[in-house]
Length: 149
Image (cartoon, rainbow, N blue to C red; front, side, top):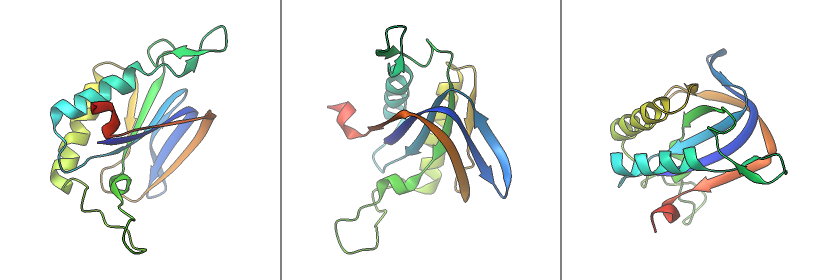
């Protein structure tokens, strides 16, 4: 599983010219599912995401979590996080999960987060989406296989 997490002051996603999800302060999460991923891994990544302390406290230190600031989540499925560009100029996506399994784990991840965060918005799995955001900082973190080691 791979997550690109951007701390935002606002973010939204459109499909077909219509906004289908929007948040205020929180995280925009681009989520990619790999071939070897399962529910246990999805839960591990969700826990790490929810516990990240990357919001400033009263002393200006990045010491507060999403819960501490009553933050919101916008979670967007993005298989292109598994692009392999090592050979040639056309990316290969053979490391990405199958669409059916990726959608199942994406939905599992979203459900898990919704049980813990007051506002969780999503994109539309497999759709052509337009994502807008105001990156706060900017502050962007990538979570990948390294959290499992």
